[in-house]
Structure formats: C-alpha cells, structure tokens
Amino acid sequence: MKKTTRNLAIGLVVLVILVFFPYISPPFQLRMLTEIIIFTLFTLTWKMMLNEGGMFSFGHAAYFGLGAYASVLGWLHIKGLSFLSGVFLGGLAAALVAFLLSAFLVRLSGTYFALLTFAFNQLIWGLIWKWRAVTGGDDGLGSFPKPDLLGVAMKSPENFYYATLVIIGLCLFLCWYLIKTPFGNTVMSIKANEERAKFIGIHVNTTKIIFLTQLGFFAGVSGALFAQFHEFICPTVIDMGRSTNVLFMAYIGGVGHFWGPLVGSGIFVYLSEYLSSLTDRWEFFLGLVFVIIAVFAPQGIAGIIKRKR
Amino acid sequence: MDLNFTTFVFQSLHGLAYGMLLFLVASGLTLVFGVMNVLNIPHVAFYMLGAYFSYQMLLWVGNFWIGLVVCPIVVAGLGVLWESSLLKRAHAGGHVQEFIIGFGVLYVVNEAVKWIWGTQDLPVPIPAALSGSVLILGRVYPVYRLFILFFSLLVVGFLAYILKKTRLGMTVRAAVSDRDMVGALGINTPLVFSLVMGIGAWLAGMAGVIAGPFINTYPGMALEILVDCFIVSVSGGLGSLLGAVVASLMIGQLYSFGIIFIPRFAIVFAFLFMAVVLIIKPTGLFGEKT
Image 1 (tube, chains in turn yellow, red):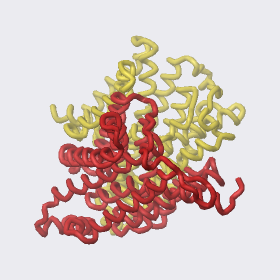
Image 2 (tube, one colour):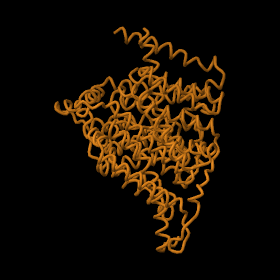
Image 3 (cartoon, rainbow over the protein chains, first blue to last red):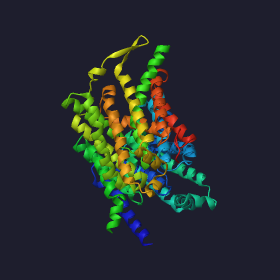
Image 4 (cartoon, chains in turn brown, red):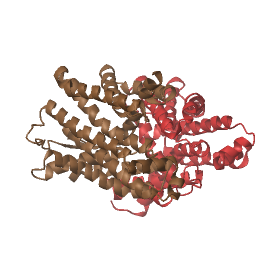
C-alpha cells in the first residue's frame, strides 16, 4: 500500500510539472520534452516485452517505424484523415505486422528470438529504403498535412505538446492497466515458468502473440506521433540504430522499474543533445556512458535511486 | 546485363573473394558464440581496428607483410583484454547486458577511430608483390583478390587443423557441446574463454588487414560488416564453422549476382534468407544447439 501511495505522489508531482512546463520553459526545452514523452511510450513497450513478457527484442524499431510510415502515408493519401485517425492508423498497421511476425517469433526464445526480430526489422527497413515509389527511399517523406485535433491547431508547439501528453499519457495508463489485468498476470506467469504455465492450461503462444500485438500497437502510436513531431521521416526511424537506442533508453532508466522508461528516455535525449552540441564525436562519450552503466549500475539510474533509499 | 560464361565466372570469383573475407570475420563471431554463448558485438570493432592498425603500420614500417603478422596479434591482445575486463562483468546480467556493453564498446572504438585517423576513406595500397593482374578466360583479374581467396583458405585449413587435431581444439569443441561439463571435468574454462576470444579477435584483425587494400579503410566499415556477419553466423548456425563457410559463400554470391539481377533488392534478400532460415530451423543450417 505504501509503495502505491508513493508512486501516486511522484506521479502527481511529475504530472503537475509536465502540465505547467510550457509556461516556464524556452521553446527549445519544450521540443525536447515532447520528444522525451514520445520515446517514453516507445521505451515502455520494449521494457514490457522484456520485463513482463521475458522476450528480448532487438528489432523494436520495426513497429515504431511502421507506425510512422503508415500514418504519414495515410495523411498524404487519404483526404481529410484526422489527426487521431492517422495516429490510430499507425498503431493499427504496426499491430497488424506485429501480429503476423509474432506467429513466427513466439516459437523461439533467448538470443534466437532477438536475432529473428533483428532480421524482420532489417527486412522491413530494406523494403522501405528501396521501395522509392511509395516511401521516398533515402529522401524520406516530408510536407505531409498536420491536421487540427478537435479544432485545436497542432502547428503550435504548445498545443502539440499537450496533445502528445494526453495521448501518450492515455497509452501509458493502458499499458500499466494491461499488466494489472488477469491477462497481464498470465503473461507474467509465462515469463516466470513457461512449462508450468503450459501445464495449468494456459495457451502460451496465443497469449504471447496477443501481448506482442498490443505492444506493437503502442509502439506504432509513438512512431506516428514522432512523425508528426519531426514533420519528416526517412528510413532512420526504423533502422538498427533506433533499435539499439531503445535498448539504451530502457537500460539507462532501469528495466525493472516503473519510472525507468521516463528517466531513461529523458537522460538519453538530453545527453545526446548536450554531447552533440559539445563535440562531433559525441557517440564516443555516449558509448562510454553505456559501458559504465552496464558495469556499475546494471539496474539503471532508477535502480540506483531505489537502492539509496 | 548480358550473362555469358566469362561474366558468370568473374561474378562468382568476385562473390567468392567477398564471401571468404566475410567468413574470416564471421568465423570468429560464431566460434565465440559457440563456446561462450555470447553474441560478441565488438567483434566487428576488432575487424576495423585490424584495418586501421595495418594502415598505421604501413606508414611506420612501409611493409604490408609485417603488418599482416603483427596487427592481428595486437588485436587478439585487445580481444583478451575486453573479455577478461569488461565482458566477464556483464556475463551475469545476461544477454541484454552483454548487448549494452558490447554496443557501448563498439561506439567507443568507432568514434575513437574517427578521432585518431579522421573520417575520410584511407586508401591502402596493394602490396607490390600482389599488385598485378592475371588473365583468366581472356580477361584481366586482380591478383589481390586471388590472394584473399587463397589466404582465407589457408586460414580455414589452419583453423580446422587446430580444432580437429590439437588438444586446445578438442577442449573448444567439447566446450561448444557442453560448457558446464567441461568445467566440471576440471578444465580451466575462464582460460579457454579468454583464448577463444583471442583467436576470434585474431581472425577478425586478420580479416581487417587484408580487407584494407580490397575495400578501403573507412569509419563505417565495422557497422557495415556487422549486419553481414549476423546474417552469416546466424543462418549458418551459431557455433558451426562449416555453417559459417557455407553461409558466407552464399551471401557473397548473392551480393555478387544480386548486383546484376536485382540491384535494388539484394540486401533485402539477404535478410529474407536469414529470417526464413530462423523460422524453418532456428539453430541455423548447420547448428545443433538450441
């Protein structure tokens, strides 16, 4: 009970800061915060896959990128597609692909699971990269419409920030709730002991497929919002670098902790922004940070804070 | 493009040269995975370091052959250092932690190389003895590519000899099939791990040295071969050297002929191949362990 109260208190404080942030911050900071919030959902889906589902994905950018591309293609080619429908479309497309791929994925485990997700990720990346007629290839897709959301202009960064906050907040809540449902318990029981779960009559593979499809949907939603945030997408939204980044974000924050994804994506976005303004060789220091974290703080930053208490 | 017999032979020779180079790199990766059950991400960093060290040796000594002997040994030393200092600490944390620390080291090496040698392509001249070309079926073919072919075959033979005929090879093969049992039999497994990592890095460094004159030396070379390496060692079967040979030759031919027939989608087919192999036989074409 005490832990829930504490989490609720932290949540309230974070929420208040997030709501009033646009009033106290320069526009540049607001942009970064928007990006952090979008990445938080993306990171959370990866984290849930590992922490609750026991599956290590090394191709998570596939869902993120598919969400981005599907929603952008929707906004480009479907006349009058609203903001929310576009985001939803991105999520649905990612969920559909996640559903199809997971039928193959659930038969594997461990490193082989990770490598198959990697192969699928690269396959989709390659198709998007080379299929110029539809995706624009290297040149990417830009200048797509940015429809208003319920009459509110999304072109203003503050409005877009609030819309992102609400949509992502809702998704985060749904993810959190998903784990609390009996279905969430089933997923976690499979992670704890797959064989026993099978013996007590749980359809292991079906459960995993449903879980992966749901996570695919949320990753797709974050991808769609990312596309609207950047107002431009190119194959880097779906490449190997993005799949390693989500690993880093989840890991810096701490995989086993509720606040991990927020902390992780926050540190990652600020760190890469700050380092890249200092030096061209910023990835050197980023790599160094990862090595140090992996050696000295395998539970992530959230883990350190928890241990101190 | 018109495909007559000569073109066919030449394309397959091109594919063979790249395939063998790929094998030299991927064999180390697959060996390390087989023994230690670690997907060793910095492996490709060793390959890149081999190429850059060889460039530096050319500047200092001016002799390619000295570099070919010395550089892989230096890289092997770095490999042992990496295994015994960092990887060991991450081992307890499982695959994810090994991935994180591996990518961290890869990033660090990747950027350090840009710092030291700059971001431009470094042209490495082909050693004088191998700079000519020979006539094959009335067309000229660079000798250096034939050298890559024969040299790689030599290394494969050497590796096969060590694995099949020596005591070290026997221990390694035993460790591939059952790591814990080998430890229980009183064999110093940490030492075996370090040695295997050293051999793997030595192979990667060697591949880097001979890749220099073949495909230049540039900062992106590690990440570029990482993907091909994954395809080869996974579809061949992690831990299987025979699988690595077969898969790298297949990938070499796929790229070589893909450029003629399916110029835009050759890379897509490589990933499709990997995915299909994993779906049908998760342990790869020749892998045994699950």
